[in-house]
Image (cartoon, rainbow, N blue to C red):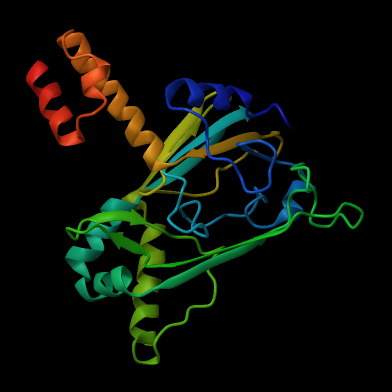
Length: 275
């Protein structure tokens, strides 16, 4: 189990850098396995459970998992994703009242994790002999988050992590109606893409935009899947470095001594001028 995620860890390090470190787990990747024992760990780990479409890190403030890396270490499955941006735009056009509520009203997602020991090793939640290293996570936010210009920046959705909503009484019924519409649309085939996911391959998603559900695993097949995340700042600055390299190749006089100091909007113009 400890080494199941090594291939994806090494790949991400080459492309971007280190994946986010978990609060307790010893590795910066997690591992899910299809076994009778792992299914007892909860809905997230029971691969026979048809988990609703969701984004990850809904319980973390700011959603640090921007890019999500999923590595199929063992087994071949059929999985699915949902385009949260297309979904949000559909609600905006066809259900403007619901869209307003989903972008303004604050919901809470929360959880307490006891899946690891103080040494960062995985443990069963039913293990009475091994002490856990519990940690609490809570995040209160709108389901659809907008940027300063009013554009959709992020979708944060997870029914399994949804906590108690401290909703104003006068909007409770309207909001729950909007939220029910939203959760039903998350499962609507118009916004879902199914795909074959073979052993030894990786799926990379934008966790701010893409919802995913439970993969369909044949009954007789063993499955091991490793996962990890990279934050938005690291991704953006890696992209900036690649654009600097592109500008330097086009014009050797523009070396790193200068390009490392210019703001992004200037760097973008230099790159466009070199194309």
